[in-house]
Amino acid sequence: MTSVVTAGGISVTMRGAVVDEAEPVLARLVSDGVPVRLASGASAAAGAAGRPVPSRAARLWGPDAAAAAERSLGWLELPERSRALPGRLAELAGEARGAGLDRVVLAGTGCAAPAPEVIARTAGVELTVLDGTDPHQARAVLDDDRLARTLVVLADTADPRSAESLRSYGEPEADLVVDAYRRVFERAFERAGITGAELRRRFLVCAVPGSPLAERAGSSGYRLVPADADAAGAFAALGAASLVPAALAGADVARLLDEAAALAATLRQPYDNPALALGAALGSSAQAGRDKLFVADQGSGLAGLGGWVEQLVAGATGKDGKGVLPVVVEGVEAPGFEASGVPRRVLLGRRPDDAGPGREAGLSVTGPLGGQFLLWQYAAAVAGRVLGVDPFGRPDVRESEDNAAALLRSEEGASPTVIARAPALVSGAVEVHGPEELLGGARTLTEALEAVLAAVPERGYLAVMAYLDRWGDPDAGGLRSLLAERGATKRRTPVPVTFGWAPRCLPGPGQYHKGGPPNGVFLQVTGNVVHDVPVPGRPYTLGQLQLAQAFGDMRVLRARGRPAVRLHLRDRVDGPAQLFKALTA
Image (cartoon, rainbow, N blue to C red; front, side):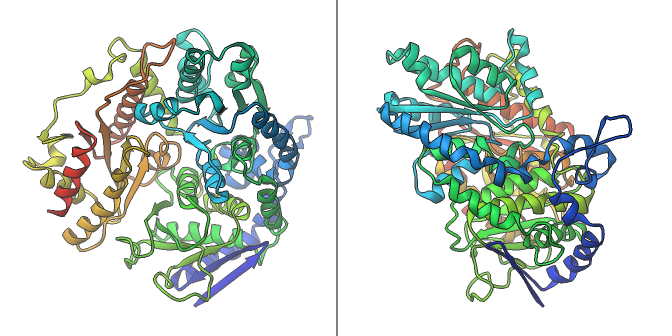
């Protein structure tokens, strides 16, 4: 059976068991009035005493989540509310070009960075995105001979409470990553002789008014473009924090908003509503125990969209022991995608009548980027309703952030390497750190990796988190397919394997890792730092911040009883080569 729902430039095709599971859930969503309630947005009504009460939309996820949801529904209004931005951003882009600033660098958090990067890559314009803390990656940007022509956008869509982690340093500030990059770039510009008004011209801040980052912009004289207070993380993809850097880099964000508005006009419909159908499919699949969503791009032309979908869906649904975990793969012929049984398969970009590899996938989604952003946001919110979770909260992300900050504040934290235990195994350029009960006395790197794969329970998954340079260490991304292929040869059922560059992956998949179903096994990859970057005014470097983030997240995983192993590359060239050799032995 095949069902195709098309509206607003978006088409969602469901096939086979997906249709059977989604139809009764879709009927229930319609009978509960979900399309009308959700499309009504976040406007609160006044109670009998004149006090605001949660809107009908905010109450969709239960009374406990209503207050928080009320403050998080602004994403529904962004296709129209953001209409004022393109003109203003065109002026800013013209001013920057007139001043000779033709390279745009976005220094943002893991939540703020994926959407503008997808917009820029899809538009074919250059946007340098620094959302990790690897010092080699940062140094590549700092040592570029275009530094004098660089405009730095500081963007923050994180929970404002995360600023509390830095208050012990004597001042409120944005999160650790944004704070570090502001300081690093200020020092780099000053060393290049760029000071005063010229220094201020090279920064643009996008933050919620009244937030620590916005206050910093005011005290430093940096230009501020207000971010949306009621849309955060991946739900802010059509807001200022995403559109500002993309537009400054040259992307046509007005067209993006037109694409989203075309779909927004259909969201109130009970039927012929592709976003509602996709949400029902995601939620019903997870309810039936099929909570792994293999995602492959098949000619969509939307570069990197799968990674943004992973950030959104995993972070929105992964809590209270429930959730949907996207597994982004390299293509329709990648290891695991064609597997039958537990995983669902999603194609991005294939028309319903296309033939070829992957045509039997349970879900196919086509349409332009602006519509896709709104489609998946709406679907993630609906899936949260089906699963009974608050899609806007990130209750388990904060603990990792606090642990990293605590490590950096501690006496030992100025050099986190001193708290690392002796490795369980050293094989050439690779150290293996992990508990004996998981590694099982492995004597070789191959045995250690096989022990990690063997630890994945039935219907579980393996998550690889690489605290490395995603530009300078791109081969590390090959670990996903090699581990998936190795797992398929050693087990009766394939092992779903995810891969994420950390700390970019922590706000989305990282929430699922701690709050979702407790059936994951975790493999961290860290690397030796050759050329570190000091953070001016702080007692740590970017390399130490990166390691503190890895250790902080590992502590949370192990505290929750999640099996976790860390591989440390003593050499970033020989280490990955040895890992690949061990997996193909």
